[in-house]
Amino acid sequence: MTQDELKQQAALRALDYIVEGSIVGVGTGSTANFFIDGLATMKDRIAGAVASSEASAKRLAGHGIRLFDLNDVDQMPVYVDGADEIDASLAMIKGGGGALTREKIVAAVADKFICICDATKRVECLGRFPLPVEVIPMARAQVARQLAALGGRPVLREGFVTDNGNIIIDVHGLQIADPAAFETTVDGIVGVVTNGLFARRGADVLLLATAGGVVTYERT
Ligand SMILES: O=C[C@H](O)[C@H](O)[C@H](O)COP(=O)(O)O
Image (cartoon, rainbow, N blue to C red; front, side, top):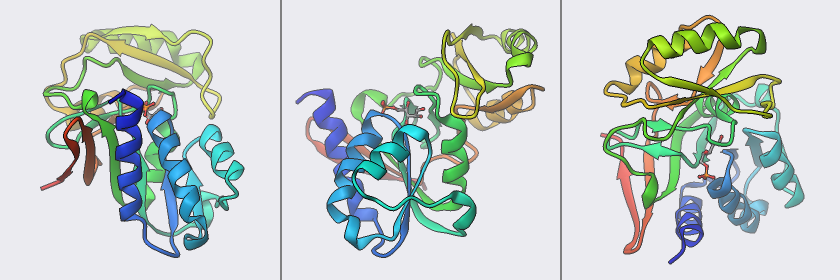
């Protein structure tokens, strides 16, 4: 089975968690795209969706799924998204596609975060995937120095601008022993908008697609 087939399996399993008549929080990336395509098959049974990126908004609209502005939504039962890495506590690194800030904001409004991944994303310790950090452009050098002082190797994502008009610094060479504490530390650097650790608010459910089928993990 290919990695894309596994992503699709995890994504389609997430449809079981959709509450009929509700607004669905929708993530960004290749796995989330499979979810959006699956969601289209039940679009008449949901009120609509809130997108975490311009790309996902475009794909949702292309399927005729009604889009809501997050400011008009008080509550959503679920937010569904992929991850770049996820550990046993369901803490994640996200933002490989640069959508981390809007993803974190939309997820914050949802009751449950459903993470959809193929088995390659499951790790013992977060950090092999470079940690994306969204940064206000004028703070680039100052933030890079601070990230280096934390033990990482900051690399500017060349030619990339986020949906919010900011830059991304990817931090290489980390081994993150305490993801929630590191998330707080990086967010505390002046000039950082947000970072790709989703640990203080990790996933509630992980749907992990393996060669043997989709395995469900729930936060304990
Ligand atoms: O910014 C992008 C998101 O955090 C994605 O959810 C993450 O990078 C995983 O993407 P993919 O499903 O394409 O591996």
